[in-house]
Length: 272
View 1 (cartoon, rainbow, N blue to C red):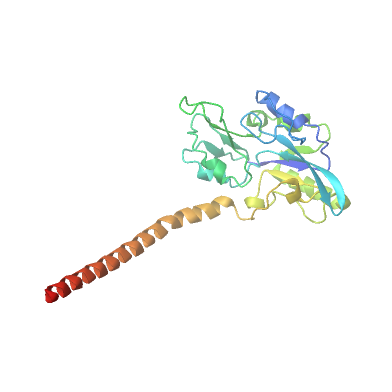
View 2 (cartoon, helix red, strand yellow; view 1 turned 60 degrees about the vertical axis):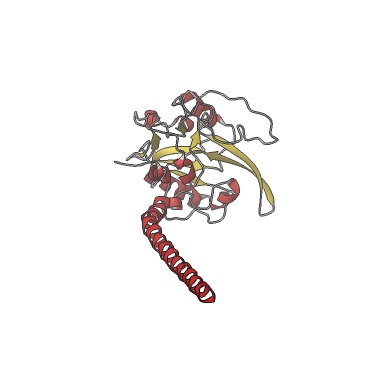
């Protein structure tokens, strides 16, 4: 089965937020009351009712001020740490690319929020803890649309062509073609974000601004679960080793104290 890919070309984004609105509309997510914070990003971060935002930044690149409109959403990692961390299987990596969640299985432990290197999964904080309402929420790549041959709602509505959707192979080829044809439009030789980062992601970026200045984290190329699972496998060995060391120290100090106590008793008897 071919895997899907979604390419974000930040040089084409105008910050219109059409993708943000389309995501809310298709997924029937309610609007929310926000307040002027002095920044254009609104709401200020992803949350249970906003699965995609345009993150506005004004940055200085090589002495020139530029606008950055980061399309922030789930990256749908090839080896998702959230899936690895979920103890009940509520998060699942689909064979064709999307990382989906099952609200019926989610127990609200939020391990996925800690595990995700991109800080994507959000929590329904405004719902009651004991009424079964608290769940994880995030972008599911419009799996109900793409499984029926449609583009994700954000891609469908983008008026500037900043978002493209197809197979992962096609999106990598499209990104490489744009970088090769117009290298002056893109920032130096930074390439494609998501091609190898965190073991590779379904969502890919090309940009005229350094990725870290846009707000995309610098992550290792090794898949996060490979690291965490290695650590988890080593944990019992480390725990048993430390338990043995501590037990040995307890015996040594206990023995020494007992011997010192015995000497004092013997010494006391002689004095009497």
